[in-house]
Length: 214
Length: 119
Image 1: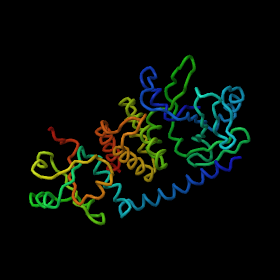
Image 2: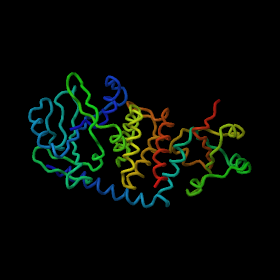
Image 3: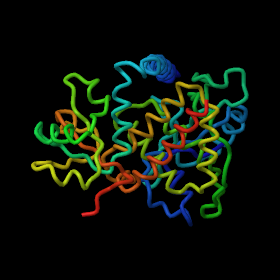
Image 4: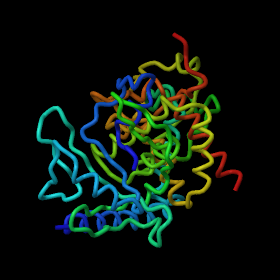
């Protein structure tokens, strides 16, 4: 499993500084092949109970905890690349096609607990091609910015390489997302794109070079 | 119990169809918004100027970018070095984003990121 929401850039900061984004929940990505194991561990979990309305969401019993949203990833199954519902009476999952871009990355240790994170390149691209609109869509794009701010140069090369593997529609969506991100207004508790517009223009230019090579 | 998950999955699949349509439209009318945003990405500054200022830029040899002329009503969008902009009276700077001011303006000047004015 991977922790793959807006908290990732915070955790990738030196010492998990957590200065970039204020998260509203925690997204836990469950590869469909380990779904059974995750269910077993969930039975042992304390402090969270399953939401009656959204069965893949677990709600905290105290204000100190965040809501946990379990989402599915299918990279090798027959339905890899599709968005579908993994039916299960205990932990049903919405499996998102674009999560197949994620690859395991660093494991950050927080108070003795290992937290597995995805490699930044795949998560950044996944956030850029988000198709959500309004507040949620803007937040996804700003999380992509936060990830770019903690990326190593090698992550950026990896992002461009990963971009090359996408279908034309998704490549266009990534470029559109990057353009939209560059023009977003600052939002409270999220990174401000304004001082980083040169970085975003440079990345967009790199992606466009891939198009001109084709 | 999983009805809501199925509804969300269906909405995502529907949005994918819309995205595919938008991609096919990228070189036509729908794509003009992406092209306008793309111009703005490379802009450090955006200024609104009046018709007289726009005419002055045109007479100085500046050609409006085709993107603005694709819009209805069309707008003249110039890419101009910041120093030249100093000669245009009544100019008004606006934030670099798709704002109401930007969309209502008849004439815009974009100062490219790499040639930002130092003032």
